[in-house]
Length: 202
Image 1 (cartoon, one colour):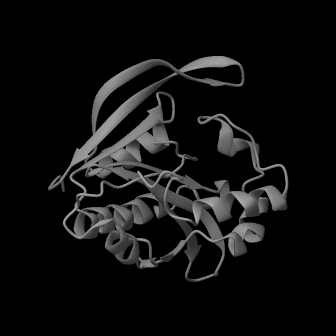
Image 2 (cartoon, one colour; image 1 turned 180 degrees about the vertical axis):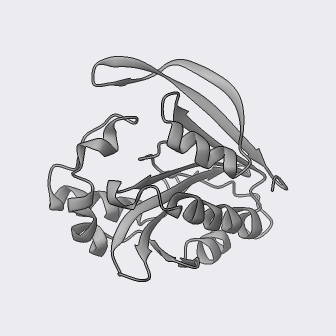
């Protein structure tokens, strides 16, 4: 799981509630003791822009900071549609707001398809180390399993990203694979672990 970063995508159409009910139920605000998880909106792009500029965020996931506020606004507008252009996937993205300060501190994302979700998160550096990642990902997993019928959750993580590996293992994800040369980061080929959690893993 990029302990910074990733993207969200999907849902199968044969789910008992149907994809549009899933969207109505799951793509909504979620709450934890310390956080409010807000469905992604282009209106929130200006608040997120500065936090996404920190180079440390891209150490284990590659990529680069958004080049402009307008670029990020347009990207969030696309993601806020909640599904891929062909309708085969739902893109579920929540921005994380601290209840005590009202500051945005990162996001969680899920790509759901055929009851399988690829999950990821990102926290701004100043919010790391306080348990927000586990808190937010737990809330997202609960919604996916409870409201979307997801039975398998998958995350990929850079093999040297110990902080994200600890988050996954605390949430009962189990390492299932090593993917060699999974991504090029700063011109260097890097490896990833795949972690999986199935329904009922608590």
